[in-house]
Amino acid sequence: MDGIIIINKPKEYTSHDVVAKVKNICKEKVGHTGTLDPMATGVLPLLIGEGTKLSEYITNHDKIYIATIKLGIKTDTLDSEGKIIEKQEVDLKKISTEQVNKVLKTFLGKQKQTPPMYSAIKIKGKKLYEYAREGKKVEIPEREIEVYEIELLKIENDEISFKVHCSKGTYIRSLCEDIATKLGTVGYMKELERVKVGEYEINQAINLKEIEENGQCINKNMESEKKLENNNNIEFLKKHIITIQEFFSKYPTIYLEENKLKLFLNGVNLSTDNPDGTYQIQIKNGKWLGVGVVKNKLLKRKIICKNNISVVK
Image 1 (spheres, rainbow, N blue to C red):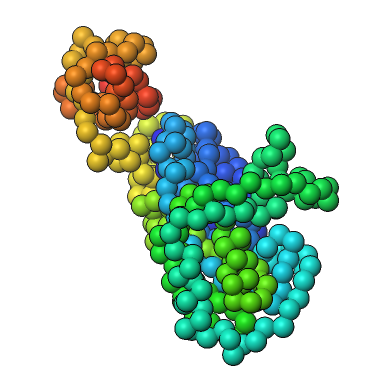
Image 2 (tube, rainbow, N blue to C red):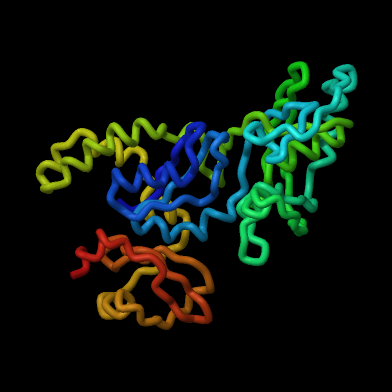
């Protein structure tokens, strides 16, 4: 299996937990494109088999989240899993729809953000959360992020729910804290759901339980082509795996002549007049082979789908 599966990550699971479970089922290389905290839920794209080579094309995608802020309480991790380190009274009369909307709009556009201390960012070869657990202070460099859209969903007593469309690298925990500060109090991220990564939305995602139940059945029936063809559960994979060919379907195509095919498969750079960029690679007979990159008039092999190599042998 080569491609992408969109998982709706459940609470209490780390992204690594989900990868490990799917890897055990598929018996293939599996990776993810962006960690979700254990308390967070939502879209987690998993890259399977040769699909792991798609990471560079997905990790830079923007994201959409739905988050809930709990006002009046600050935690050391900026979320519900941390220790309470500060409490403040919240004047609910000041937490009006008009005031909250006004504050949210101040976060639109490009800005600098300080990541939370409890994060996996490395400083001098060590992750920030490791410093935090040791009680050590370290200077955290700001990073540039961008908020494209931010929308108030509801206010319920001392809790605010909002939807935000933001760039890669945006920490919603930090955003929640900054919003609370502008509202004149403290706060932490109580809930978080990632509803979109790039073009992949929550309604495309499948639950981990579905993968476990259907995937186990598929794995047990991989002994022969006949059993595989007769297995009803193969439709489950066909329905939910986004193949590498589908992923690159909107990219331009280069058709290779037979005399250049073997050279390309062996990693030889081929001369071309095509402009620099990423291309689908097809054989003249229409068979899809993989992906190549053109740079300075040379076509270089990038991704070759192993299941398609037999087609040209």
